[in-house]
Image (cartoon, rainbow, N blue to C red; front, side, top):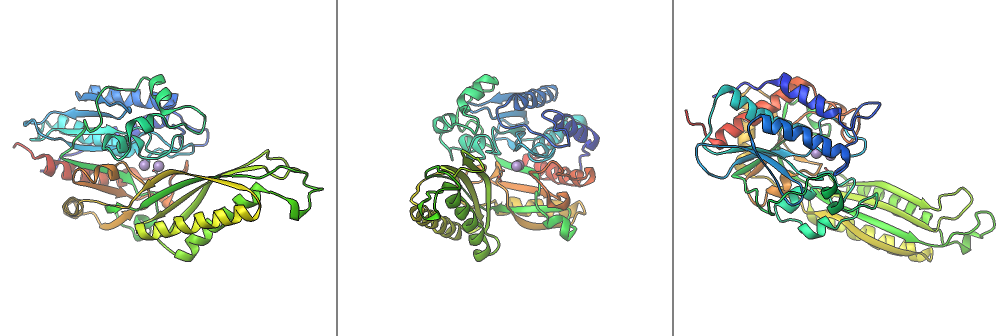
Length: 410
Ligand code: GLV
Ligand code: MN
Ligand code: MN
């Protein structure tokens, strides 16, 4: 059975949600648990209600809507996130949430009942850009992260998850593990260049690489830039810069798929003629092989200790996120591949470089992801773009996998 989706409806919703937190030059800033996030949630919840879904919110603000099935069984869930980084695009996360809604509305329009219930969800703070770690809501929902620990996390602006969740009115009552899917599916933009470079329409995602985020705080002593001999400095900035350079050197030495990113780097007092007394930087290390990721972490941490000691500085290290690599369900990955081919699309298997809510479900239920191409491989960038017909192909594949998993009654 082929069910037509309404691509115009989906695209107009993606654009409408993209107006909330819109940036002047394009893209969005909808950091988790901000007023913009609340407005985005309100809009999606309105659409969920209009689609006739039963909407539930859990203790960390994850929200899902269920379309009943003929049988009262575990639902097929499609989901992702609607929060963004501070310079985000219109598609990252939003696509998986609104495509899930589109699949359900298309089933409604065609009057097609399913055996299993079918649902769609958005998860709190997937990005981790305001409150670390990433995949926070889905991690709590699936017991990979502790609820109370996560509610107590302080963000980059000094507020806590608990305060902000309450403030925006999305602290629900459904407990951890309330969402127990029969299977979990996430359609997402690739956020990298592989599909576009190879002119392939669909990525059947085999898993997600391991992620390690660490914050380093270096403390030295501020002193006069002109009068302090180089031998007498306790320069926190130089230590931080050397740690940053070592992160890059590790990625260069290890080679692909090891990647390393210094995304935050702050010096204080941050003045032209003062030796910095304090530095803070974050390092994001990722690898598909957990043993190699551990080697990279060990090398960087040892280097950081040595370089701080050599400059007579103190070093504090804090893990902000640590997730092992995840493999998706073989049968469900094969189903994505088969449905894509059956619909006439080119398809290839590939790992995900980005973290995703799906990885939190993978240990608990069959899970898979569908990728569609990203123009110039760009994401976490306001120019992120995927063409409507490319999106349509992904949603069609999603629909077919959902129909097979949920079972139709005619
Ligand atoms: C989160 O989505 C990440 O991959 O950083
Ligand atoms: Mn995402
Ligand atoms: Mn993202």
